[in-house]
Amino acid sequence: MRLDRLLSLSPLYSRRRSRLLISAGRLRVDGDVVRDPRHEVSAFQRVELDGVLLQAGRSARYWMLHKPVGVVSATRHDSHRTVLDLLDEADKHELHLAGRLDLNTSGLLLLSNDGHWSRRITLPEQRKPKVYRVDTEQPISEDYIEVFARGLYFAYEDLTTLPAQLELLGSHRARLTLFEGRYHQVKRMFGHFRNRVVALHRERMGEIHLDPDLAPGQYRALTEAEIASV
Image 1 (tube, rainbow, N blue to C red):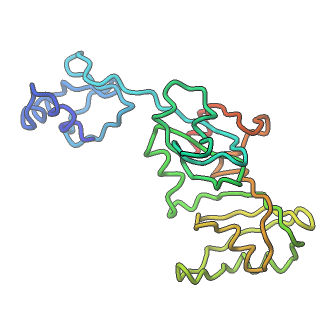
Image 2: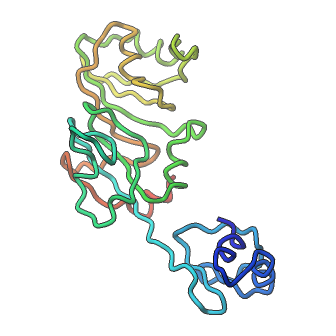
Image 3: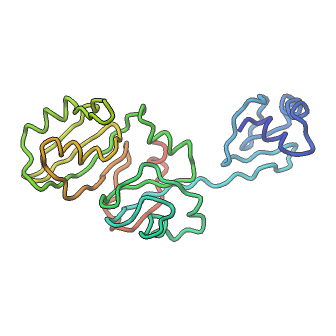
C-alpha cells in the first residue's frame, strides 16, 4: 500500500494532509525517514508518525514442510487432512501455499504469509527450477532425455513445454527438473511414453532443497539464506 494511502485511512488525515506530513519528513518506515508519498509499504513494516506508532508490522513467516502422500495442498478440505493440519502454529491460518502438490505427491512444500515472496518463487516467468524424483511403472529409457529436452506438445493448452532436464537414477527412477508448472505436467510427460508415474516426490524449488532431516509431516522455519535466495 502507498504510504499516503495508509496514513489517509485514519479519519484524522486527508490524502492531501497525509502527503504534506510525509513530504515534511515526519513519517518513518522501519526507523528510516521516508519523504515520498508513493513509497510502498507492506503489512510487515513498522510505520511511525512523529514517534507515534501507526502500524506495528506483522512478522513474516516462512516454513518448509515435508508433505506426505494423502494430505491435501489446501488450507481447508471437507474429506482430507490439509497441510495446515500438520502445523502446530497459532497463526497458521494466515499462511498460504507457494506451489501446491497433488494429493499423491510428496516432498517439499513452502508456506508463508508473505504474498510477494510467494509470487516471486511461483511466477512462471521467473522460471525457477522445480526438481522431482519420479518412479514409473515401466522402465525409463535414454529416449526420454532427448524428448523432454526438446519439449512436449500439449494439445489441450496448444503449447509446447519448456525444455526439461532428465537424469536417470535407475531402470524405473529418474530425477526431472522443470522450469514451469503445467497441470499434472510430470504425469503427462511420462504419459507420452505410456509410462505411468507410480510415485512423485518434489526435492527442490529454486535454490531451496527439502531438508533431509525432515520426516514426512514435519516442518521447520526457512533460514535467512533460503528466504533471500528467492
